Amino acid sequence: MRKFDGDQLVIATHNTGKRDEIADLLKDYGVTLTSNADHGLPEPDETEDTFAGNARIKAHAAAKATGLPALADDSGLEIAALNGAPGVLTADWAETKSGRDFQMAMQRAFDALEAVSAPSPRTARFCCTLVLAWPDGHDEVFAGVMPGQIVWPGRGDQGHGYDPIFQPDGHELTFGEMDRWEKNRISHRADAFQKLVAGCFD
Image (cartoon, rainbow, N blue to C red; front, side):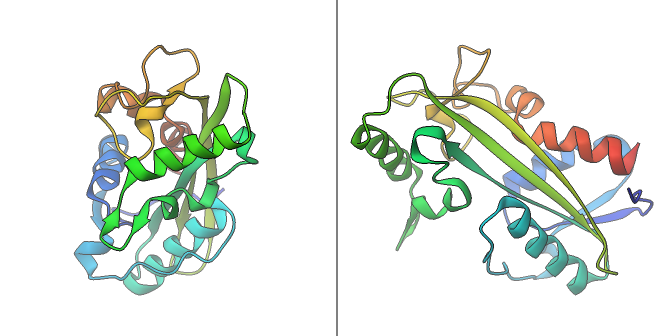
């Protein structure tokens, strides 16, 4: 396991919410964080069929372009009764000609569950894979999950994406009803980050 020993890290995303989440999780390690947007980097095509594969593409592209270590994540929702869909296509289900519409994506997920008469509880899990890549091509990979179930109709207007229809195991609130920072403490991304920090930062 390679330790991170630098003082600069590129977060390979244009998503400011994701960048802020990661900044909060790494705030105690004295690292200066920048993002793809700060370096004028394009979003690479995500052509793999796994979260790890797509996170690797993003991390290595940013590390190669900047000459700095880069951290990328790929995450999504896997619904058991839909054979793990939408999975790596989680964001694609929301794509429209005028941007992403997650209300439409949540409706699509619900309609797909209804179409197969999925029984309750409609189990699902959010998955997050983090890849920390160095300019020399080395990387370390960490995966996290948060199991739960799909609820309908959605509840709450916090968070983003499919959060209003996902109720994590052991909780009465959906991710959409939780305080953002409370969600960040228990989420699939937090699970992966605990492993990243233990492996590369502590």
